[in-house]
Image (cartoon, rainbow, N blue to C red):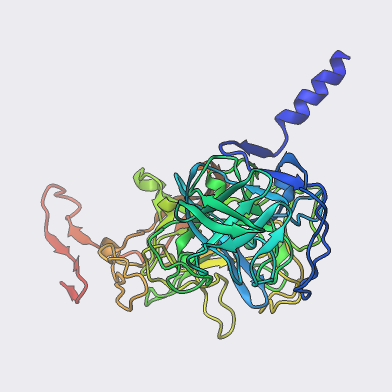
Length: 497
Ligand SMILES: [Zn+2]
């Protein structure tokens, strides 16, 4: 028995996942709800005599079907939240529990139906009810309807608890099946606030987003400046219990270009006389192999969970500290916009207050420009255009490209992100990365601020021809007498003798 226990403990110690706890994502299974609805049947409805019964449960990490971040699937490129599908059932009518206490900020009751709770973290819960827009709509014990006085102000009745929630508390202001009901606008942590559904026309699932700026216009679009806009949502897993992976982080170079699975490790430094040659560096945080690959194309037994990826470089010859590489346009950091702290105008994603254009990172090839950014493989649809990669299907990693490493960037270049002004040094005295021995590593930080590191690479920057700085001629016999001195001074403009 002792031996057995020993091995079990070892297995736990080496399990390559981390448990991140904070808010428990509770829900309740609707025992009698059935998925009789079809996406195109607006008349279907669950009916039983009396009330539905519910069983409390919690979402666990294998219930994730979609993590926060980029997608490479047709017609869709960014998922501004997380999705749950309870693995034990259809999800239809299951009760969504509020992750935190707060007040009802908004209920959208037509098309995409959702609720936002104004609390400490401001979560939105999407795809409630179904495609029917003629109120009242019932799902399980929940009824979506509106105020007597205003058909555009929606409320949700919980027939099981005889409570009604809405944006504004009011008395005798909702009518349902002959009763007149009061509305409360406060909810408790763990309170059932609505049913999991498929509005406006999705598969049945619960989507949770975290809202960054609550003052934005309320709507159903994920683009533009609306409250659900891609640049206004962060990753709820910063706060919700889940299991996250430990990454095996590799720094890779192009190698066999067409086979994304066999890029060799290391980097190839590029030089040119003009200084404008850029060195491409690829960081690949690989999730552990897991037994549970989902047929939907992505999720493994944990979530991707990445908040930012950085490359840090130090001139070892000068005993420098490690810092981000600064190219003419970008620093060597890629942020996902997953947390509030990630609010930078990064090329992958629009920062919450930034204006940079989201774009996928990739190696340059032919007339395809190299781009700093992220190429999504975890959530990649086999039917999607894969550009120059010949492999198909998802992988256990996303690739993060930094393509703005230019060894001759001028020490005074001001990192004109997205601009056209760049400065290069013609002489080593003016260069940011002078010749010498360097070390480089990648750091991946997840949404809970845990960091993971690649191995450290040693690289030699040997960019400039040696030049003669000074010549002193001393006659051999009378060695103390300096006969002749000539110094060279180098400037950006010309060489002065
Ligand atoms: Zn979703």
